[in-house]
Figure 1 (cartoon, rainbow, N blue to C red):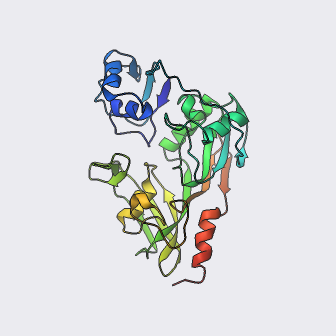
Figure 2 (cartoon, one colour):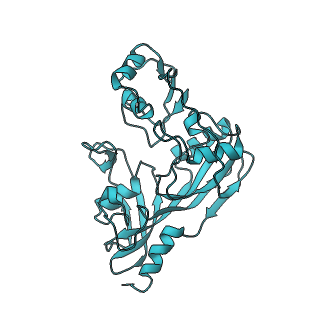
Figure 3 (tube, rainbow, N blue to C red):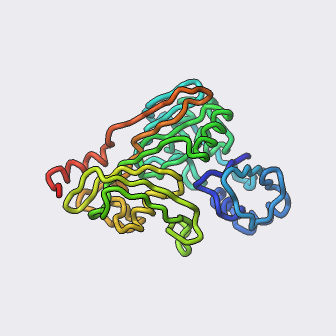
Length: 304
């Protein structure tokens, strides 16, 4: 299997990354596999303590020979916003995992993609992530790029790594955001005591979010957010740090608002990028999803 490290997986130990990938295998067994040279990074042997960087290529044999998980195609409806022979852009619904995990192998976007495209998907990042170049959190909806072949996958990965695309989100924030426009530059790393969370931390990676207020309500703020970098949970961490977490984001301190929704009210609504192997610029925008529209409707007559 070959996996290329992206912004969501950099700056962690090699053995920790593989432990997360193979949830059912002990850390010691993974460390033993690394020591036995069953794992290579950039075609070199590395120690378990090696800190992964964006662009690192990890090659390894199956580390769980007695339990090979097969990802099955599933006939799950997909909203294809745009596509050509090399890639597609889908509108991922809230509540759907982007790709399977060792504990959850059905109902994901990858299962749906396998049904629609079969083997016409990139496999650079293995069977669990066929076609997946970047991710959205389970309860974040919106635009997601899919690679139909490995050459396109590498093109899109380079574009993301070099910040040569524009990604914008809409969100409802809890409370009254203090500025009409803001550039949040706090570094983000893994939470020191809760590894399933990210946090603003002095030794974290550079993280830049541009925020613009669209409308203010008595208890919430409707904002547009542009990602300059793409750290895991970046918008959720940055807005929480500013004491205005994403509405209904219980993981990052928002609690449950008066309008009940399935977790955070956050949508990737806009993408602008160069079409692979072409000078043509593709610009895509989608309307508010059901969750965002529901909260906006509630606050319509509660403007500041």
